[in-house]
Length: 169
Image 1 (tube, rainbow, N blue to C red):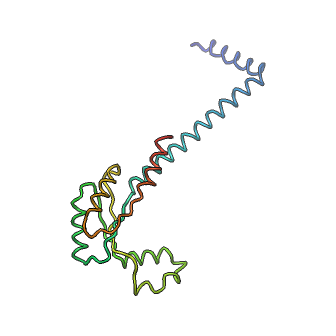
Image 2 (cartoon, rainbow, N blue to C red):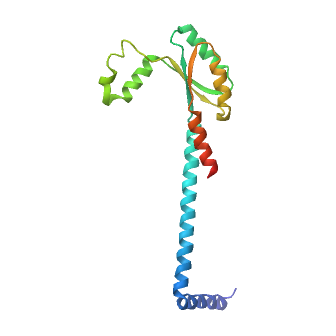
Image 3 (cartoon, one colour):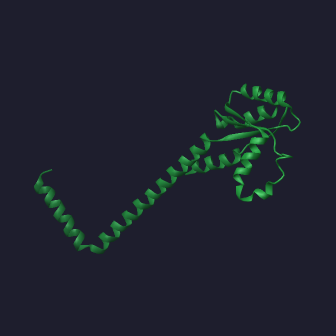
């Protein structure tokens, strides 16, 4: 395209824009609004996908040990957890550590927790992360079958809802 023809197209476009000012302004505003809405949608979608991935990678289950289990039973539970292939990391949380963490979290309301040091109602537990979140139900079933496990705290429903929402967007 030569300079002369380029100049001609630009001058014709400017003349047409001035001649049909109202329609030209309406079309510019419409295109601008459409691009803005598309940009907002893309940003929202990317943000939601990022949040879902973060939740999936930081997902952990808490496995509570039966309160009547002694130290050897608790250690054997850890060994059995180690044999489950879908478990990535295992960390032991004693009931004293859990109480200390709870007190740190509730430092504004410590009077509500007075007296718990002598009679700690919390249980020993394990926090585990998974290799594959899709296999969490199978992993929970394997963990629940271990003798000495009282309860598995699994927030899979919340994560499933978040992942489902991001898949729909």
